[in-house]
Image 1 (tube, rainbow, N blue to C red):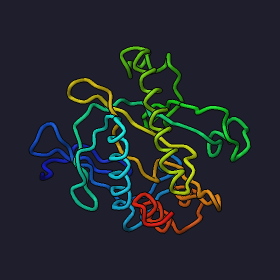
Image 2 (cartoon, rainbow, N blue to C red):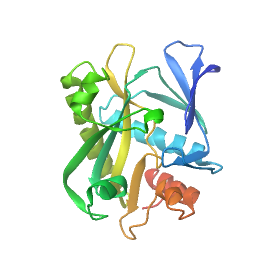
Image 3 (cartoon, rainbow, N blue to C red):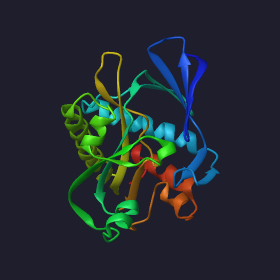
Length: 239
């Protein structure tokens, strides 16, 4: 499958059309951004690691019956996937308070939440990705009805349950993560985008060390080393 025309370029990926009108290619970039693009850098090999990690995690979810856009990994930096209409809601799933949740609500960093929290942000860089409630989603016509929001929440929690169990076996805690959903060509809502340390927070069970993009956000260094460790654990090379 070959790329034809560039459809979209975001912070972490380029999305390309292909000869097949039902399929797209995501090209994973080495660029790093944080704080709504205020902090920028690049790490050679980061894109390839995210592609490989996303590939493995999409396979895990597909095997558990979760519908995703994933088709196959073409090479180190390129993934073939179904063409979907993006739902402009960023879905945040939180198990432990940290980051903006601790900052905004005054919750102790590292506090285990009494239940899984699912939040919505509006995918709009110009507006700074503001928080959304259900009524906002309906007013903006991001979904057709409240049943679709309930389904997205259900799917987010299902993904969380699968990921928590999977990574617990790898000696890692899933702290929080961001998901995106889209409509496939039949109108079904499915999981899209990527599943990587760029949009997941992972903590090592023994050390509590961050194994994700917080290493860039907080200036901790060794980002590529952490991503490589995540991939090794996913592949069962270490535990």
